[in-house]
Length: 327
Image (cartoon, rainbow, N blue to C red; front, side, top):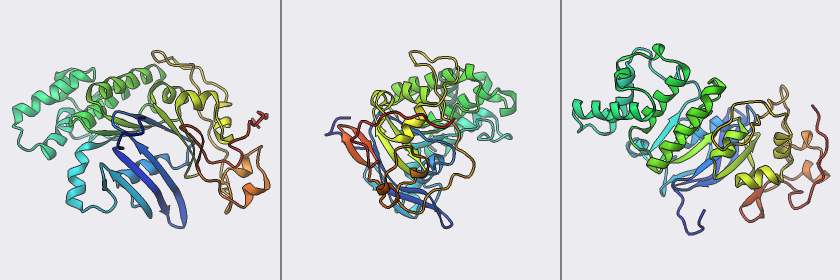
């Protein structure tokens, strides 16, 4: 991004605790207008917790989330509610995110009732009909209930609900992982089209590395609650510098339908059961084939290894020789 650009969202040293366990640990990053930032990491790394903490759906123990200069974590409830029209979320499970007792037209119209109470019923109906058409459904489908739709159609409804207010930020939490492979590309391309039309910034959380590479301007790699690498997609995929990122990219590719212009798909391997996070030093060191003694005592800071490429590794400036990783 342009160095002179002002960030819409600035997350600074964010920490989220579940009891005595830190799930998100000192996360900092920025998101700019119209930018898509991909967030990847294995299950349990803290991605969804981070997303919910940004929106103040979870309590944070430390840090700040500045949205257009206002800290969402400290602002008054009324002010937070007013900001929410610009901050929307698309959920992982499309069906469970919809109220089964509400017609989908009413579901999509609900944000308009809350944030644009001056609209009359006819104006709301026109907005809902136009949005249903925009996401590839028909206006008549607004009279149906969620159980009458497929998973892909339910996700289109969820996207319509999130985009009906033209938000400035859309957070997508694994929005295609529960869908058939044949539908995933359609949903991703729909999100890209909507983002282009509305100029919405997007934080896109996914296990699918091909999808993230296809739509992101920058990629954040998360491990055990911390960001370990931040880079542009081409730099990350061709020259990863953190051993964890190298391990992700070394995973065996899965055969999946390709998106328009997207590379062959890679998916993140699930972590071994009950991975133990060391109490001191680098959290990844017990799984790292490149670990040094310093990794056991000192947490590596997230530092800029090359322009725009940030890495949290004591060996980030070395040309590490690829090692065979355990299957």
